Image (cartoon, rainbow, N blue to C red; front, side, top):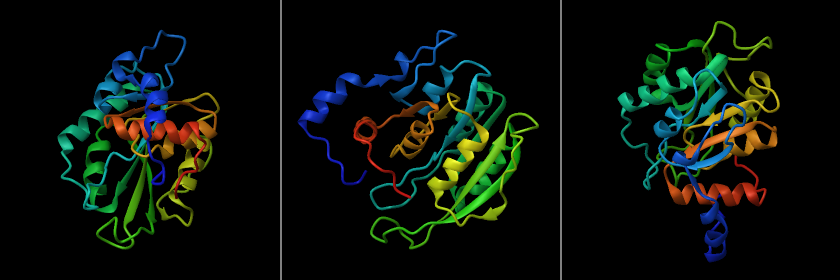
Length: 227
C-alpha cells in the first residue's frame, strides 16, 4: 500500500463513501459490514453482546521515526474488555504485538480470556523504517469460552510462515464463511483484505481518516497485501 497515492479523483470517489462509527447500525438481522472512521473503543461499544466470531488486530502503530509510541495499557484494557463482551461464547481474540509488549498484553488479556498459545515471528524490515533490522512479533491467541475450535492450533512455536499467511490460516480454522470478523485498528488494512478474500463479514475501525481512505482504495483496486 506504500505505493498508493490519493489524488483528487480518489477523494471524490471515496470521501462520500466514508462512514463514521456512529453510522454503524446492527438491526438484529443484518450486519453493517465495512470500514468505519472513528476510535476503536467507540466502534466496539456499539457492537451487540455475544455476537462476534473473531476479533483480530495489531493495536500498535509506528511513528514517523519508526518507533512505537508510548502505550497506555489502561486504554488497551478498555478495548480488550469490550471485545470480551461482544464476542460469542465460541469467539476468539487474536492480538499481534511486538515482542517487548507481549507481557503487558498477556497480563491484561488473561483477565478476560483463556489462553490458547503464542506464535512468534521474526520479520524482515527496511532499516530506514524501523530502529532494528529483524523485529520480533508475537501472535497471541485467546478464546472467550473453554473450547476455541475442533481443529488443532499450532501455537507456542516460532512460525516459519509469513505473518499474513498465519493470520489467514487462523481465520480459516476459527471461523467459517460469513462469520463476523472485527479489526478495531485497521491501520494498513491487511486483515480487512484477508477477511474479504476468505468471504468473511468484516467490520473495521480506524481513527486516521487518510489511512482509512487509502485502505478503501487498496481494497477497491484489489491491491496485494505485504507480508
